[in-house]
Length: 276
Ligand SMILES: [Zn+2]
Picture 1 (cartoon, rainbow, N blue to C red):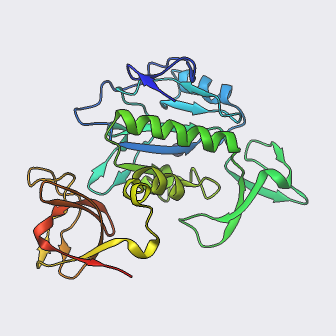
Picture 2 (tube, protein in one colour):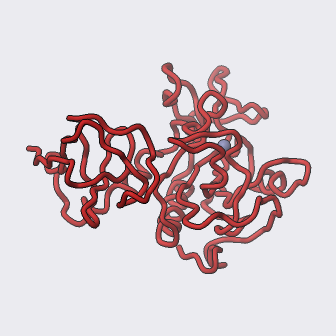
Picture 3 (cartoon, helix red, strand yellow):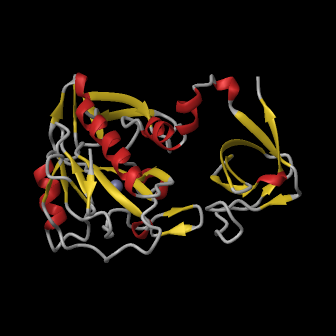
């Protein structure tokens, strides 16, 4: 899949424009992808509502059941998909992120041997996944995503990562917890970001899990930043001494590390240790 001039090339996607945007992203952005489901029955109903001037919502790309993509806003302009949202020190994620809406009915209600969506459509057992949502403790029923949709989202994210400095792939449920539950546990969100964002080094060296490079913080308090240098913004509370981190990358005397968050720290304050 390929992007040219902020649009998926026509052989990979239709383009049906909506004018619901707040304009061009600020420089260095977007750096985030937010994954959603439509909670609807078809791509056309989603596309129509994203074009409807009375609906205060829009998105960059809609993914149909068969994996067909429809782009609605070029990737250099914001869309209105995240609403009230927060991640790390950020709020209102629309100004940081590209939105992907996957056509999917969402959470389903069981009735006898079938399941139905909030809009009344019935689904057989093979279209239903039983799983616990990351924000809930008990399992519930969810509309299964098609293989074609999952492949299309993976390919789309790969294409976006080639063109933009994507640092986060998030679910709406993670940036608006309590208010939103999409894309839900039927979508392999952790696998998507693990494969596409955190796996470069592993792909090159193919180490087992036990060969992950770890380190510990060797300072009383260590700032963790959005990029490799003291000029980059801090993205979370400083890491305290002896916090264990996984070292993902190295640049100009800085390590990209992962602990609770993923960010950059000055290398000289990390004592590296080989595990296993
Ligand atoms: Zn959503």
